[in-house]
Length: 210
Image 1 (cartoon, helix red, strand yellow):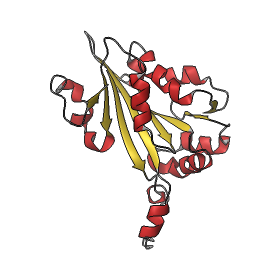
Image 2: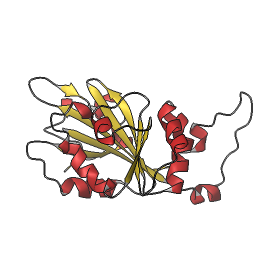
Image 3: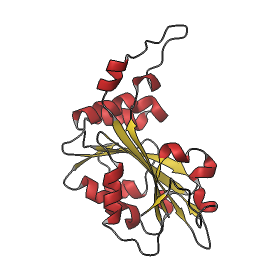
Image 4: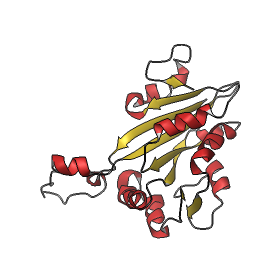
């Protein structure tokens, strides 16, 4: 089973990764500045192998083409950049390691910015992500997330992503597999994230099967 959790528009707000010193007031953004602020998109790709032995993690799926082929439609013609530099993106997508960050974009991504993305924890790299996506809004930046039996991938971009992912999935048939696309905000919490454990025969209305 492939699960895609989409989150757009995503602010990648500076407040999340630029801490205010203790006791200092935080400057509030005006409505006008919020409306002018660029918006981004994120997709969290997760997988669960359902069978005699359940394995959790996108890279734990028996057939990686279930997710790699649709994604390849999005990065067609793009140039790959990696942190650490010199990695093979194909191999890294299948077997990432902590600290890895990948980017597919029309032009090479600034290695210093990609290093900051890979080395940061959680939202601490969002300022570098914003810089990459402001320079190349169509870029796709990949960061790995540990799963129980492998890794999941998070994809960031500077353009709407949900409809493009749906179209890419629909263009690639997947006999024998189930693929769900869900809004990230609706699926927060472990119970909802692992809905395949309890809701496969009665999916919630916010889970779209492709």
